[in-house]
Structure formats: structure tokens, C-alpha cells
Image (cartoon, rainbow, N blue to C red):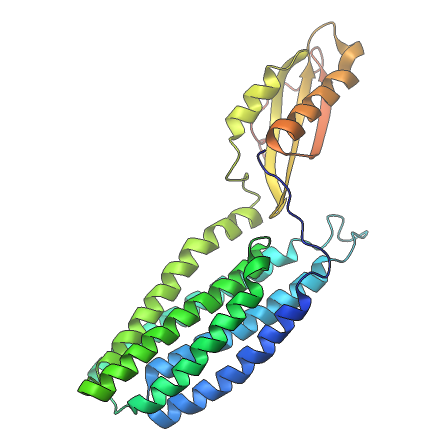
Length: 303
């Protein structure tokens, strides 16, 4: 069924996220020290990215906590959308980091520095093990939450970066290819930017109240207009309240002579929306055919 709901259990995975934060912070310190001692920009790039992993997990952790708060007089929709905001912050951070690393890598091509290949390989191997472990901690949660998925992808990208750093260190050891270090840094930056730009779109779509990408607005409109007793539909709004909850509001014009069936018609339409499209949060304003809005917009409304 379209738009099926996969809500996260309130406290599911908090311990995993917490330990992932601790491990990533410890690894970041080790990588930065190792990068400075070895002279490897690629290792420092991996460390900076790993720091962003830790920060993204911290944001994800607290966003999950805040999202469980109930609705209030000032936040009538509750706080669940805070996870979407957290995802936006994480992806934006990744884009900034990717651009910075690309700049530093290009600069290193013109001013190469000596790199201790052995130290790079040793530290990057430890980093790879930690990145893989952290990714495993958040993998199952990433399937349910856009917020956790952003943090999980941070770790996947960092694991790939660690592999690239290991390869670079090995080539430096055997062939003294010092230029491979900024090249690997550039590849890491490129991957970070590609991943971030591809994932940030859906986040922005939700925050901009865009329609759910898996639903066809015109098909939904047609289905409701074909329902018995419905004369027309207008002022239709379809959006995502949060990642796994779609919502719809509209004006429904009841056919001439059938106002006495208005409540039944409304419930029929709601049932269709829920069973065929997975939309359970609906608000329908009923209008009789005589007093319906004049020249209304079918989708949305004029400001």
C-alpha cells in the first residue's frame, strides 16, 4: 500500500547511537593526531569527515529525543519534524566539508608535502574498523528514519574514505607517490558532495511541504472526483507531515440534491484515501453545490 507507516519505537536504538558517538569522537582525535604526525592531508580529511560523523550522530541522537515530545499549544503538530531539520543540518555540513576538502586537495597538488605511508595505513585501518562497526550500529535504524539515515551515510562515506586512505598510504610506501594523497582527498570530497546533494533533495521537499514522491497527486484527485456523490474537489493540499506520515486537506463539493449524504460521502472519500494511498491524516471541508467557492484553484489556493 502506498505511503505505509513505519514508525520508530520510542527508545529503539538510543544506546547504539550513543556508543557510535563515543567511538567516533575517540577515532577523530586519533586520526587528527596521526594526520599531523604523518603529514597526510587525506588522513586529516578522513578525520574531519569522521568528526562530522560524530556531530551528525549527536544531532541525530538529540533529535530523536526531542521528536518524542507530545504536541502542545505552541507546537500543535508536535516535534517529530525536528528529525528532518537535523537531517538538513547534517547534509549541509557534509557539503561544506566536501567543498573545503576539495579546496585543500587542489592546493596540495601545487605544494606537495612528505607523507609517512606506514603511519597513514595503520591509523586508516583502525578507522575503517571503527567506521564499519558504527555503520552496523545504525544500519537498521537508517531504514526507518531520514535523520538516522543521514548519520549512517556519513559513516559509509567515511569507511570508503578510510579504504582510499589505506590504498594511498600503501602506494606511498612502495612507490613514494606523494601526489596520491591529495588525489585521494579529492576523491573523498567528490564522493561526499555527490552523496550529500543526492540525499538533501528529499529533506528539502518535506520542509517545503512538497507532496510525497511516491504518490501521484493527479491520480489521487481523479480517484476522489470519481467517488459517488462528489461534484468536484478544489483547494487540494497534499504534503508530508514527517517522513512516514502523509497528510491531505481539501474542499469537497457535494453533488446537487445529495447534501443529506454529506457525512457518508466524506467518510467514503477518507476510506479511499487511507486504503488506496495510505493517507490517514485528512481534513475535508464540505461545500454544497449551490454555495461552493467561486472559480477556485484545484490544487492549492491563490494568495
